[in-house]
Image (cartoon, rainbow, N blue to C red):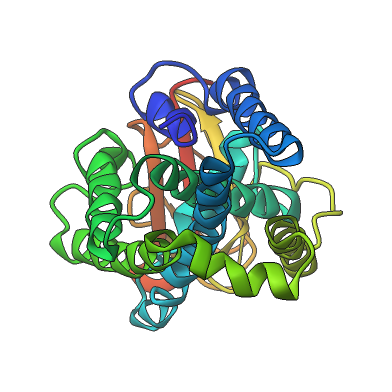
Length: 297
């Protein structure tokens, strides 16, 4: 649970996301990784190391499957991948979204999927695939029945909750397939790649770098409306603070949970209530953007 502790602790009001990640999660993950590498290189506990390797690859494949099955849902207007962007903003304590925060958010997302896979493999290696599916559904329940559901507006939305649970099934299937018979599953990977786990992780980072190109500086935390969309797409403000919004379009923009802004005008908008505010313009799907009201400042 240490991998997702920053998110749950932040939602429960126990401190900032970044503080939990850098003070708690990162040291723990470094310790676990260093211990497993030491055992692998020294030949100690070979069955445990084999299970861990299968769990890492299973967690990575499961996370990819989890995301792929959700992509078609974007066509319905449901922004099911949007929370991942918020993770990067919170992780870096940024005021607005940028390529850097996008990259950080997806790295955090895969960190969770990979290390949840590792944790399952260390305890449940050799079990039938359906154990991993059940494990994946339990993981989602941890989000649904915590304040995460309130902050990300899942509470009472049966369609989004159903999508979240259904998407965890392919995660569990991939993880369970890799860990049900670790020796047999790892054999082709070891035959094809000298260090399959390292190769997979390097490939993951490379893909995310090529996708996000995290070299740009952070954008301003002031919002500009252009073609009905926020720029930057995400902004984070401390609870009780306000954000400046300028309408650069030629028509009036009416924010769903905020003010109406005449063309060319600038207003201060003070959203209330901690959590993620998904704000559309005049109710149009795909318009507007997101404001994180951060109780941790």
